[in-house]
Length: 385
Image 1 (tube, one colour):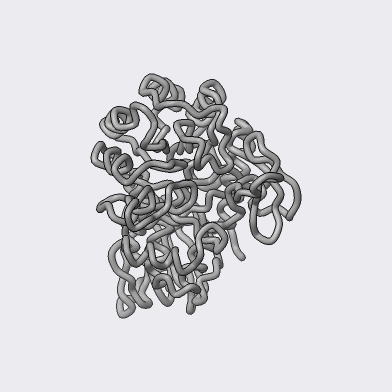
Image 2 (cartoon, rainbow, N blue to C red; image 1 turned 135 degrees about the horizontal axis):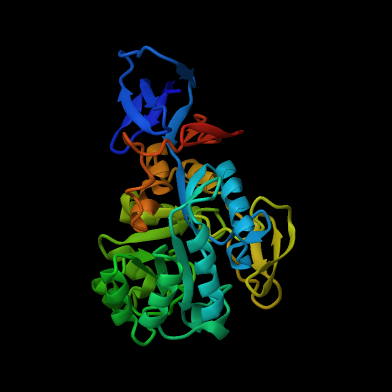
């Protein structure tokens, strides 16, 4: 049955409206927005002082609820999709780690065969974080699988994924990176740059060849120096590229995150989680890929050695609240950075990330302090805080 939502604010695609009514149609789509003075006939769901926003889009997530994309288990992926609703996420890109060709190919086959049957947040594609990286900024990726980019491998993975391999991250200094970037970009998919010690010039060459995203900006990349701008300099300077950003307060200091948002503008910053299997789980010992990890004090770190950060346990709704609490953005900008911008950055903005007539009614309800109150999928309430 169709109904209308009445709330204090609506974060629509291009404007924020105060009050008014948003139609949810019989078939679970968004209908029209009506201004406050045009009270419609029909069922009205009253949300009082709350805000209505598009469902969040997590385009870089490895695991959740003690499951990992690399487990290559459809039931585990579906459990992740269900769990993501508790973080306000209604669309996502399962993100494998660097691994062997065959391991990654098997993940592609599993997702390609089953995507569309998940019962929670909708899978909008696959994001390969690797394996074409370099050792200097390996992070929690396994360098034994690092190698130069191969268009042949990419095309084979894409065939196994039935076209769902949406984005792949590479290090620009690897041999053949520019040619690989051209190939992927020409196929209509997305090249991201990350886990790299590239010079500014090497990064720029890949961007001019078609790369459009920087992977978790500042983390796993050559830093900004006034005479050697590096990957960070390229992420900040180049136009019309989108910068992923982990806003848990551990990966990037709030002041630095805010500086990037100011420099790039919110239209080009995509909030991501980089969440690993310990997301929504208690502190303790876990595994990321083939490495042991300890989770404590809100951080996931590799055991032993340098204690590098190993992904995060961040929920995307918390990232939205964080940037507002840090005075890094307005509420509507924070929502946009976690919905429309990540969708745009992965070329899936035609499916998710905005409240528009005819789109699936995937949306969230926020309290005035930006805490998550509820998540709706296809117009149906699926999570209440």
